[in-house]
Length: 265
Ligand SMILES: Nc1ncnc2c1ncn2[C@@H]1O[C@H](COP(=O)(O)OP(=O)(O)O)[C@@H](O)[C@H]1O
Ligand SMILES: [Mg+2]
Image 1 (cartoon, rainbow, N blue to C red):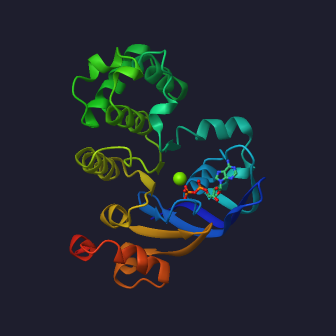
Image 2 (cartoon, rainbow, N blue to C red):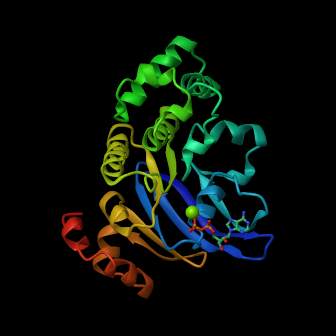
């Protein structure tokens, strides 16, 4: 298996002074799913944004390197990088619905996003979008394409955002609590769609969740973050049966039924 992503002693600070990431190192192979867990404020979102080269205002890289498909992301020109971002590496934000433009129909936004990365006709892009919406378990995708974001439920918007990200067939999908805004049934369904996608397309994924049970269920490797540091990283089965870090033990203790779920992983 080839190495997809290597993160080497990555540090990020915000102008406010908080060291948001401190010497974070880990690596993943193509097609793997990594789950990142940790309490609120531990640096999970900062890590994903850093990988995508999209730190929010006031954030800056303070050290380390990010190597994606054999090349440091810092060595790409702006133009190359903007082509990679959204295509080879795509992100689903925590509140993805907020990234849809409320005054444009879903379909026209979706088609435009596809045509930014693929040189195809509007008609072909439309067909691609409809196909992916239905793969995400959305009924009547054709009708949805004609709707405005405000006409969709939260779950539909989130699934649309995931569909848009995965249409580009990224090699790495970054998902920041992709299901936390959804009801439990929809959460399970979306998680299943994501694991299906990995099985079908070999998409590598980093899935941030505050729920270690979700990570244990989906991920090959789990990373545990605390105060900006990756305090533990390893194979899922190892993390849940033999956690090294006291904080990981506490997260696991909070999920009593986990051992049963994780059997066989
Ligand atoms: N734009 C920002 N400006 C200043 N501090 C920030 C910003 N975004 C996040 N932080 C701080 O960085 C730390 C990590 O935040 P974040 O990555 O959002 O954690 P998580 O996603 O795990 O909740 C927190 O202390 C948070 O307050
Ligand atoms: Mg966050």
